[in-house]
Length: 408
Image (cartoon, rainbow, N blue to C red; front, top):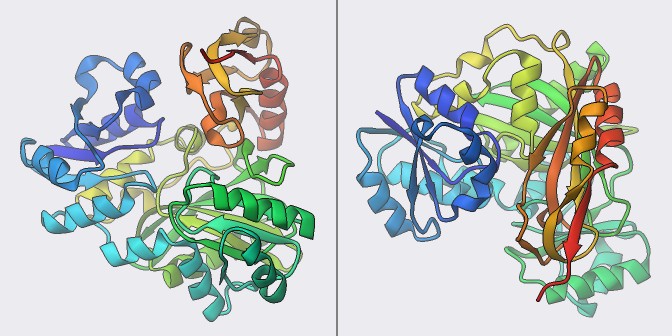
């Protein structure tokens, strides 16, 4: 029996393969680019999972590849990009899976914001704006400043700009006009407060908050994620408030099954949504969930793929008793060819059982460094609290310096 994954996040394949095996199934990854998973495929034994090379942007080719798999029982996806195709394929093959219409809604950040605004769960409306100078008046007239501009179908923090004044607004709209957006550009109010993400699991109206992750982004107008730590220590009443709020948000957004990675700002008036991703968190979020909670959380993904209530919803967890983790994304400081890293040999001297997770490999050309595409690797550290783990990870990460050469 096979559970297929239509692409995946860069990290987590090992945990997924182990989780599939625990249900009596074998994991098969369908991918158009094995290099995305180079770190995990290099560390896993060859027999851990199957890999099928296929053009995952071609639904017909994917359908043929799925038809060739032995006893296909489920189809999973942990990415935003392939979430709609995966839902459509599962429905077409009669496999358990989310409602494709609900997935389409969640892939449109503007429609989600409008739905929440209409139900009183967002103080800001979403306003479609044209890229370029003609969009200035629409933003000033409807949203005001400061404002956030977003690609309605953007991923990995791409296509997000913060405009605190008119000069920054003109600059952001000009940049948006030069990019190939995946969706439409829209504006919403800027939210004042620290950024977090709620890591949740849902099944038919029940949502469990697995924990809250702290997030730090760059100070520039173009948003780039830099640091994260889990689990954030929240007072009991505040955690309960966030769990109830995120349950209502997911219900209105139409997310009824599976993991969700819900980014929010904790404002002076309470939590306010940034965006909903109907998947487990990216980067090393899945790994730190497993370690901190003392269980392989990916078993819930397999349960969902097989059409049954995830056991993780009711299982006792080690939240607060296991170690906490922080990780830092290490970016190249300029475009070019990655030659390697200085400082990796120093990591063992730092406290926190520091680990290095490479995202890129020497020889690769980095064309973009302003967003997650410029990330070359991540430094992970542990401690008794998320705050201490974040400090340890940061202190170690500043010693790692990507070596970049000019492109030929």
